Image (cartoon, helix red, strand yellow):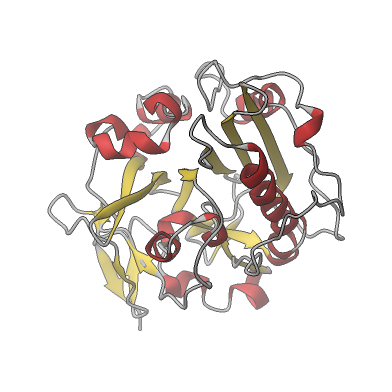
Length: 317
């Protein structure tokens, strides 16, 4: 699917199926990823993974190309996949609110490269990162964890767990000059990760079962700020967006108009939020709430685009 919001002010707020015969000016299309493996060794990598979506329609919504980056195949299918599965288990077991309901706030992003592109159009990011924060009702406190890894060919390594402080320091080095990066509000601990939350390679908590689709390939209205759409704030803890939004959108970097906040709408319900880079044609981050593993098998969903990002295009000959 594509994102209508990237293609013009008056386009439909709903994701729509991508046309394989069109090259979109402000976002990647399915044709950009055609033959991407033999050309660059990359495939479509979800930021909001399908298998972290609890219901079928939300799973389908993750197949918008505004939620996708070119990810090196061995990284996507290797340690990133392992990390996503382990985080899913950790969230399911540790992130329960006072009503014993599973709930965690997750933000996953990509740091663009300087000049590595797919078909001279779509930036191939240097690294990918993810972090979560949730309330642990058993411990009666907020807990948090982060992971990141370089988007390059690998030999079945694992991604170490990191603190939010370490993540913020890493991101600040990449987005320096706009102030200290922060992904979550202050109640999310920045320091040591609780031993109870650490899953070492090969370890699985008793009685936990990975969703059988732990294999990854891996929408809304145009807004200047996520807060313009109240429903979109639900994907951020206390409605607080990562300050990357301010660093990039508010003009502390060059060409700030390239960054478009999107409230991802599918079948008339907002599913998650994305900050999209219309120049690099990849998302900066996607934010979502994890409320449990999927209840349905992985759907066979066509790729979508976001019309409102700007449907200026040319036909491919």
